[in-house]
Image (tube, rainbow, N blue to C red; front, side):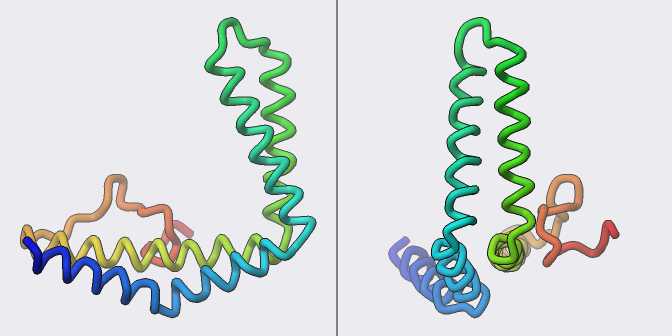
Length: 132
């Protein structure tokens, strides 16, 4: 069992040293330094938290839920129009694709099967054969 954990740590270190992970860190750093992106992200998270709290409460007001949902959508749209956020999402998708490929290899080694994820899609365009 110690060998499994040792190899897992080695894999983790290799992931941290990968170009894909380095691109994520660089994109995160750029996005965090972007004051507009930070403000929009903060607003989005704040609205999401409010919305979650309201949904979990008793008798949530549908009008307030709609307003919060609309405000959250607006903040998310602003985020998606910022180059630093677009680059961050692309870097994260690439890294998630790498993780997906690693999981597929591990699954094949352990089971002998190379199954597609449920629905055939990982959510990452990096591992997708095409829905375009």
